[in-house]
Amino acid sequence: MQMIQKLFGKGLTLPAIALWSVLLPLNDTQAALIQYSFTGTVGGANGALRSDLPVGSAMTGIFSFEHTTSSTGVGRYPGAVQSFSLNIGSYSVSFDPSGDVNLVRITDNPSGDLWRLRTSVMGDGIGQYSPTEFRLDLEDEDGLAITGTELQDPPSLGALTSTQWRLVFEDDATGNMVRVQGVLNSLTAVPLPAAVLLFGAGLISLVGLGAGGLRNLRGAKA
Image (cartoon, rainbow, N blue to C red; front, side):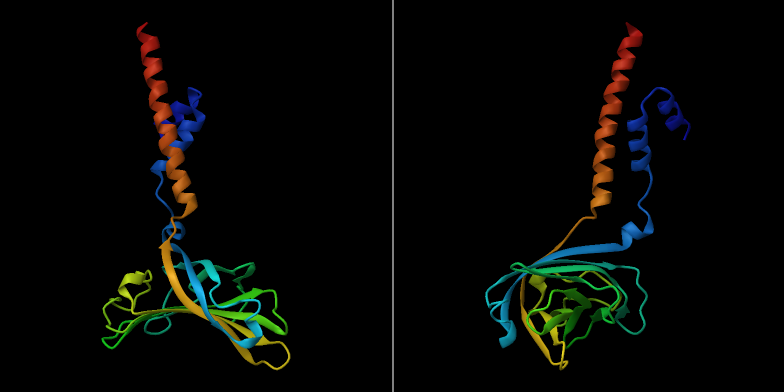
């Protein structure tokens, strides 16, 4: 801390702040929040959705979940999902924090492993149907992709025998359900932007701090 105060005194405010930020560890929330992006393809849709969400359409999305969420049963983690968004062409839905569905489920079984994410969503209606829920199922029939039922990162697609996603809609008048569904093409971990930017800014400022120190040393010798 005395070093930081001396740097402030010499007018090196920005480098000092950056140095201090690099030395500080990430807090528990930053370390525990896991974020993934994914892509996929529409493989089928109920008749009412086909014209707006046709088969073959590209799908992209992103979700995050809290890695330290407590279990309420073996492999069940309600409330784990923290954010979600999905786009199919120009159509989009987003995370509904007030909805009644929010769950990550982990199954480790010799007869088949499962990593499942379910969450309530909200978005524009299509005809008389409103989006209500998204579900992602990552399965391995060989039972080798997942070890243990603690809340963990989803397995890589190469370790799976099946990837399925579905976006469910509900008829506003009758309550009947329809859906659009498909498979994943990719699933990629996304670094937390705040942590990455903080680290990068710290490194750049430390380089500048070192260069400034060399100039001061040379000036003193002269």
